[in-house]
Amino acid sequence: MAPLPNLFFLLAYFSLVSFCSRVHGGETQPSFHSIDIRSIIPSTICSSSNASSGNRLTVVHQHGPCSPLINPRQRLSHRKILHRDQARVVSLHNRISTSRKDKSAGSLAGVTVPNRVGISFSTLDYVVTVGFGTPKKHFTVIFDTGSDISWIQCQPCAGGCYAQKETLFDPSQSSTYANISCTSADCLSFGSYCDASSTCIYSVEYGDGSYTVGFLARETLTLTPSNVLTKFDFGCGETNKGLFGSVAGLVGLGRGKASLASQAAQVYGGVFSYCLPPRVSSTGYLTLGASGPSPNVKFTPMLTEPAAPSFYFVELMGLRVGEKNLSIPSSTFTDVGTIIDSGTVITRLPSSGYSALRDEFRRQMANYSMAPPLSIFDTCYNFTGVVSVSLPPVGLLFSGGVTLDVDPSGILYVVSMSQACLAFAANDDPGSISIIGNVQQRTYDIVYDVARGMIGFGAGGCS
Ligand SMILES: *[C@@H]1O[C@H](CO)[C@@H](O)[C@H](O)[C@H]1NC(C)=O
Ligand SMILES: *[C@@H]1O[C@H](CO)[C@@H](O)[C@H](O)[C@H]1NC(C)=O
Ligand SMILES: *[C@@H]1O[C@H](CO)[C@@H](O)[C@H](O)[C@H]1NC(C)=O
Ligand SMILES: *[C@@H]1O[C@H](CO)[C@@H](O)[C@H](O)[C@H]1NC(C)=O
Ligand SMILES: *[C@@H]1O[C@H](CO)[C@@H](O)[C@H](O)[C@H]1NC(C)=O
Image 1 (cartoon, rainbow, N blue to C red):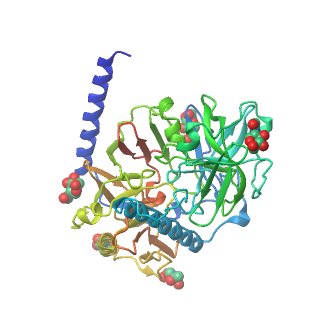
Image 2 (cartoon, rainbow, N blue to C red):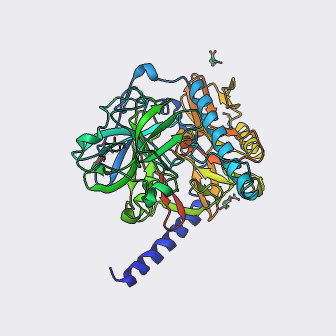
Image 3 (cartoon, helix red, strand yellow):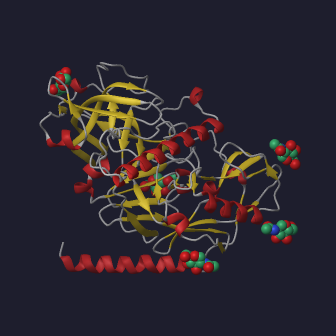
């Protein structure tokens, strides 16, 4: 606990990080991935289903074979997934540009920005199973870096609950449940309000019209057997309606005060990380707290946008395809800004940046026959009969000399052998922010070090 060793440790760690970044820009980068497209196609069998251990929660895709919620009738078509993804992007863009305009215009009389309106919910794919209450009951919830307040559906569902897979949470059966009163500071800081009985009420409306309303409450949250938060503020949802699938609720990992990440910051040092698996048929993890120094992780600064305080901004500077850095001025990206989001599926880029990426990708993929476009994708290939594809690596270049070399499972969105598409899309509006989506985050350990103001990318986090 002496300060000196800590300092040495940090210095050693920083030099290691910058050393790795430098090596990374050099010739260690393979010029092509040689992959069998079939390896990206999800299997119907769940592989590697390691139970939660230590401070790790197992992350699964809610519609994949590893999901405790699996319901084959609910499987969405690719077109529908992409359509819903576009709805989330539109609501994110609206939310961030509304708050930016609002900030720059000061407080205009007569203009009300609905600050509890969340972003579109229906593409949120990744779930974890946590325990609420004493004795604890298990609930499978979505996690979202674009949301702050966490909530689960609660008995007696005064205004209605949708059908969830697990038994509903019943606060009267938990010895640690407590309502939060109107006079509590947390009630105000969560942007909540009061009812006649002086119980604090929360409400969240998502961009697709889904909503949840109920009591703001305090409860014991068991993440893993060794990770228990005794006073976790969450929404006990009495009126819940919308496209929530069959999950019990949501945990918010946004940057706002109400999120699990912020509430747990004192216990876990303001760090959390996750790894999203390369296929819907394999598992990843979510960890609160540092998972130990991993020399593999390279850090880029986490930026703060006062107008959009719940989101994690990073500084995207450029793109690389194969060994070629694309000649796009970095201002193309830095003028609009970039967020990293667990709930957006496909990365969105300013259209001039996207066009440069697409043109170079098509040039390096000229040996393959193209297939018709699909939804937001304009660059698709027919790999029927092709055993091994030479896929040019795609790199996202961030400030601090950090490159995220997208895993092959994040370069192509594989619908079938006869239609695999470059998994990036252009923003419609040149002023809209870029979004690093979850497909491009696959297999990386993504570290949100809020305390140090850094976002880290560690290759080979999960497979
Ligand atoms: C591409 O850009 C990265 C990051 O700025 C740099 O490290 C690398 O040397 C550049 N590569 C080439 C071939 O210019
Ligand atoms: C499961 O966890 C054990 C112990 O932590 C580890 O040795 C093993 O490699 C893991 N298996 C997979 C498939 O991840
Ligand atoms: C929480 O508040 C609601 C509404 O006032 C009430 O019905 C419920 O009994 C309260 N629960 C507890 C444990 O105080
Ligand atoms: C295309 O195929 C030819 C002949 O097989 C090969 O020489 C060339 O390197 C390939 N080009 C690319 C970009 O893979
Ligand atoms: C893909 O290519 C194969 C073989 O060349 C061809 O038979 C098939 O019709 C193509 N499929 C599509 C959807 O274009």
